[in-house]
View 1 (cartoon, rainbow, N blue to C red):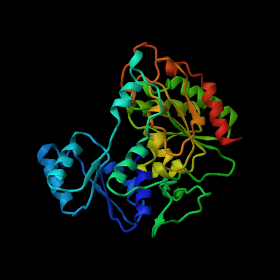
View 2: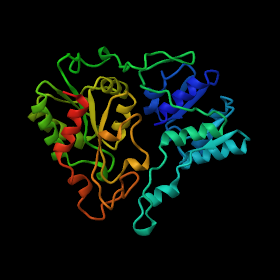
View 3: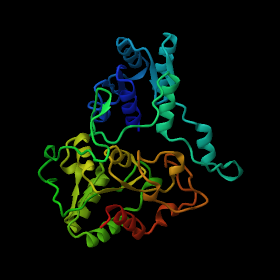
View 4: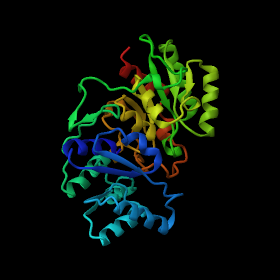
Length: 346
């Protein structure tokens, strides 16, 4: 979710050299984002483990002679690095997660305050503004748009897409009569996962409505792979993405060509959003009110039901105190199918 803000920062201040520090997996999001954006990877669980490792990382960062530090993570490791930079008299600002408001959003009883919270995009932009670099309206559209010399290089009415020739032959090309539908049915926590058997019902209904559609199944892990094998055996139009894709960059290319993505409140929702693909998102224990909608996505494409207990969690990790996950089990597959058909428009 940093990407749209960093992109806009790069366009607003083309004379500023920006280095994004993150784990190696994030490289595809940033390395071709703009001419003045560089990516620096750091494996904090391997190469920079513990306090000694963080001290080595700090020295590596200081060698770049930064003039300002933006901590957009605000976790224990970045807190330590921020402390070192503060002691070194660097200009430093960090993310305000507004934990007080989050606690009240998911509280029970009289402490509960249900209101729309700031998005991470707004919170990230606030960090740069406190550093003296206000970003204003976000200019980002897709990771496949390219900024040159501080200007947008594409027609804003055209959706940028990745090169399908970089994908395995089992995937492309996309024919004019096909609908390409992405399905990302899993998430990190049970409170964010629509029952897989009901997701399969969604695919069955869509396959009947769109007999020439192809369904690309996104998700990594043993459980995901076993589930996708079962679905592909029953519906030949299904293809498990991880069976053919070598890296995240290829997944982003594929997402950019989808007509729609069906996703939970998960990383795949955000990845598809970064390719300007419309997402029909299913929400259970979590809620868009917490601010974590995908970039540029419409509330009209959100599938959720109103319950007095929702939201009960910001990230979906808390067990259901009703023990029934009615927030997810109460959603009929037909509701999701209707949303997808409306997005595709056929």
